[in-house]
Image 1 (cartoon, chains in turn red, yellow):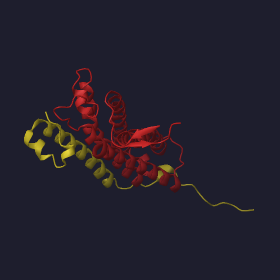
Image 2 (tube, rainbow over the protein chains, first blue to last red):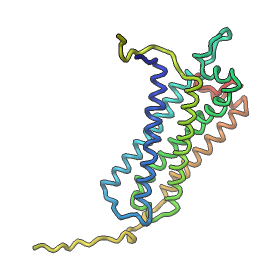
Image 3 (tube, rainbow over the protein chains, first blue to last red):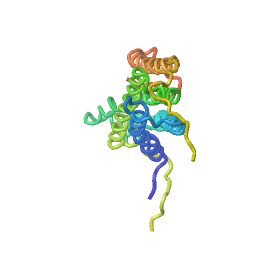
Image 4 (cartoon, helix red, strand yellow):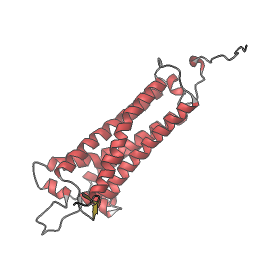
Length: 188
Length: 64
């Protein structure tokens, strides 16, 4: 059983940080709703405020780790230009996708989304974490603040969900692979 | 026998705190997102901006 370094980083980026972020999003929405809904039971305590703050801060850290590893570690491997004489494009995922009309749109739509729109995720969730920490108990009393917060968290969840789906499709059609091989389990 | 004199503060009477810093955070996130969108479209359409944005070669905007 073995894995290449590029595959490992793709897993860390997508299945590690990215998937954890998506899992955490549903929890954040429930926590924020329970904290801020006008008819929610009054169970806000300094302890639960602290947990909400830690939860959203970890989510913001996950979002930044996802986009930074994706942009600065995985993406350069994805977009590497093949030499003119290259007959096999398997090591050049971007060129491989563009070489076939059936897969071209995965790059043109999929990677464009991941390159640009996915950056809204950490921006939105960092702001949401700051506001939720600072206004934890006061959210209940400000409808406008609550709506803005829900809007940004929802946008972040949507952008991350689409990016996650496109990541899976891109990796299915043109996986980022190569580099050193890491042997996880030796065969008999 | 002990008698508790603790009284609960009604939730409706929690004083509101100024929301200036929340507004600033929301506005800055919105401006940042909007600037990102404008810059992405501009670098895609303008070759001079495209080369200007190529400050780290491995991530330079894709060739046409």
